[in-house]
Length: 106
Ligand code: SF4
Image: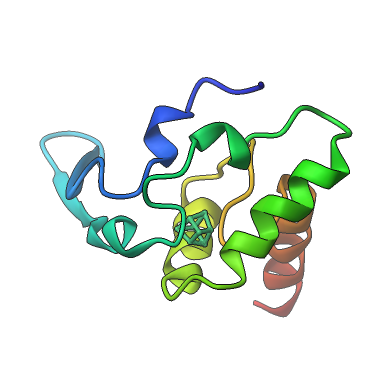
């Protein structure tokens, strides 16, 4: 299993997260959507497959396909530059492509 952020992937683990914006600025990010994820209660390892394990990736994406907070999850992964794992039904490679497309169209 790859990744150090596995425990952070568990929906519902955090209701909110503090993010330092520089200086004395602190922003509270609403992560309550995590509690509603279809992956709630599943082994986080499912979403962090070993490199090249396409079968495991497909399993994770199949779970995401049933998830009602998929968009929030994907946007979180894009905003926080999640480099590993399946988030919002996307792989890291797919998220990089989305970021590139958004930059081009901005
Ligand atoms: S989109 Fe996938 S990874 Fe994100 S919360 Fe839903 S099931 Fe979990």
